[in-house]
Amino acid sequence: MARSQSAKQRDTPAPTIGRGIPLIVAFVAGWVVMMLEILGARLLAPYFGYSVYQWGALIGVVLACLTCGYYLGGRVGDGSHARGFLIWALIVSATWIILIPPLARLSLPWSRASGPAWGAVVATTLLLGLPSALLGTVSPIVTRLTFTGAIANAAGSVYAVSTLGSIGGTFFTAFYAIPVLGSRTSHYVAGLLLVAALLGLALAGRQLRYLAAIGLVLLPLVLPNTRLPKGVIYEAESIHNIIRVVDRGSDRSLYLNYAAGAQTVMRKDAVLTGKYYDYFVLGPLMNQAKNALFLGVGGGTALKQVLEVYPDVRVVGVDLDPEVLTVAERYFALARSPRLDLRAEDARWYVESATGEFDLIGIDLFVTGQIPFFTTTVEFFNLLKKRLSARGLVMMHIRSVRSGDELLAPFVRTIGAVFPSVFVFGRNNLILVASKTPVELDVLIHALERGATAFPAIQPVVAQALTDFRRAVGGDHWPIFTDDRNDVEIRTFRMSYQKD
Image (cartoon, rainbow, N blue to C red):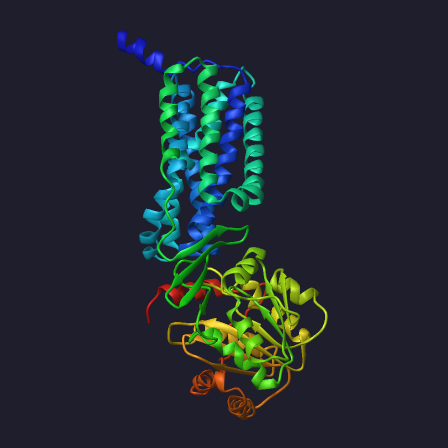
């Protein structure tokens, strides 16, 4: 008899406490879930880039965990302990979210070893799985707490309010939190929003015994901020990038999002760097260019080299992120001058909307280890062709650290579908050279040899380029990249993660 009464007590639905506070909790939970998802992209970017893999992992894992949370919340919501479970779910979620930044620093480096696809899934599950599942329990439980007889009305109201919270969290995180507050502080804000919802829920239900546990959630906030690693002289977040400037002896490097490789390297005591950036300085030698467009500025090493070596060349530099342009000027000595015009615009949009022609277009648009797919297509190269003068050349950086043609050959085929002559030089970091009108390889080689005499400072770069300057060949069996069909991200990841 006692056992039967105990079971009956467990199955007794939790009493309702009015609609106001529970609906606010549902709103906050929806807001925080979207904050976590967008902030998760910033956490994963230095290790997995901004890619279809990363976004697929984030969206898929969060949805899977929310699904589990909805199911669990439905099972718990009809019991007598629904309100207590909800409070503890919010306590654990808030604590976990506040701890995500240090947890990310510990888990992401080894998660990356699992590869671009499963590594992103593992990392997202470890960091976002628990809070996403627990926050998924909120809406079903809140529906039961606000239920007064009209179940469809209660469910509709709860999920509408939760979705409104998700909309608010999306815009708040993308347009304010990340660029203004930064990722670490944004996680604190998400945790504190849950704490505020917790306080309201506990006070409304007169469950003051939970206040001490809620206070413990705030303890991680007093942890000291981590110091910048040795050599880091600047670190910031912009709308587009996590930016880090690192000094190492005579070199200064710029890292954008991706911790595995520098975006730009500058030698403090020399014009040339010994890196692939030096190859862009050869462009004006090959066609006597007087004006050049660089898509992708980074630290501006290539732009600065062209301006220093050729006093009669004008340069336009285009970079999506205005903060990167500011860093290039402040930390990489890319001084503004009448011959330099810097534009904070999207590369493809600039090419499509710009007027005038350029003799040389340099492209170095690797971001987080890969090239944005929409700057690798036939449509994009047709836009470039319209911006070139009759003698115009395109020089494009392609990173290919593996042997074979898996990444290079599709680029050759794509560019070759637009330009009549395509050549390549370099190793690992390759430079594709395409001309608007047909040109022979011997003509370009002769121009480089003649230019090396006229500009002794860049003779080492000329000599290196001439060792493997060749006509680029891509077989018919390789794909042509288009806006509609393009697997450059997958090819780039296979090149980066898989061994020969």
